[in-house]
Amino acid sequence: MGKKFILIVILLLVLLAACNDKSANEKLGAKNNEAKNIKELVHDYSVGEITDQSASITSTQLIISDSDDKKVTFDLPEEEFFVSIAPFINETHPCENHSLTGCQGELVNQDFDLYIEDMDGNVILDETMNSESNGFIDLWLPRDKTYNVKISHDGKQVESEISTFKKDGTCITTMQLT
Image (cartoon, rainbow, N blue to C red; front, side):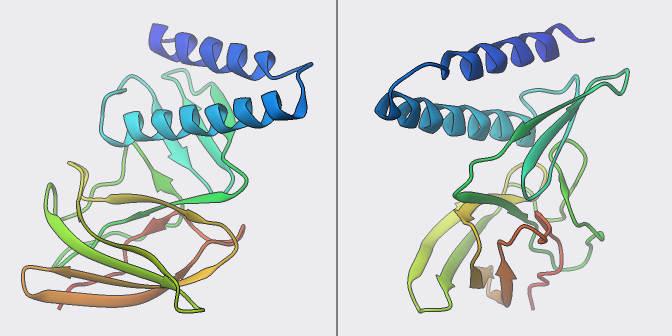
């Protein structure tokens, strides 16, 4: 097993163990820190800062595998849903659950104008974001909702509906800019 893998597992286990036997306020603070640490771990895999294991993400879990195919899973935040979108012009791949260490999108390190609103018309996101070196834009959205997503880039645009329910995939590779 890789040393980084073991260190990450130990640190997360210590963090989780530290949450026991505390008041409700302390538990809530620890839970927020736990969610923050999981998000940082997801980010580190996504941008290639951790490379000696593979990692994928479902609607409920981060799954890390070492070179011996030993797996460790971590629950994702209860209120937030991870989704990774790879807008494309010419090339894409079929995907349901995002591989943080394997999926590759076409448009790397590019700026995109993202606009996301929920079905009630509430604006969730309206900003310019950069795709990572894997061609994906990673987002944490509120769970159990449906969203209208508009992405613009270099005079091209795409609009699509996505949702963040337990049955939904975390990898969106169907948004072709035209």
